[in-house]
Image (cartoon, rainbow, N blue to C red; front, side, top):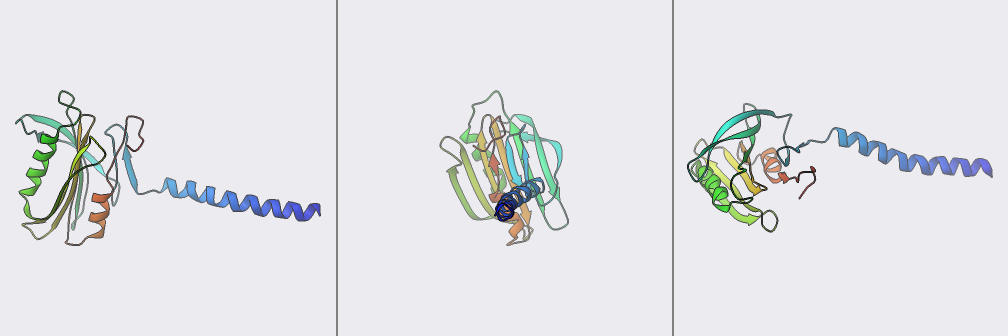
Length: 177
């Protein structure tokens, strides 16, 4: 009887331990890229590089922005983070300005203006670029940061859709808003 109990206990423990161990293994290989300092997460198709780029605001000021990117022959993925500490925490005209710059790249197939969360202005765009590629973009502003996700890829790319739709905003602790 004691041996039967030990076998049952071992079976129960292994049924609990296996999913926990697998969950830890999957968490380490997660495709979700998170950057706590710049307050975003997104699913890049591979590990991104980072560079500084200039960004012109709706007031004509040029500020430094961080851009995280993955580029290959077929597709380009960018997350641009514009930190504007001297402006309002959320600035809908700045979000609209960023959207307007992207609209110039081709024929607008879809656009949507909405809040990521109440008080967090955002836009989503789907554009047929003049080169025949598809631009998918989401942009949001929170905590003095304008975060712009852009994927330029062949029309109908599922990776571009996943990238654009996976953008998340993080608080100072690195947790989802």
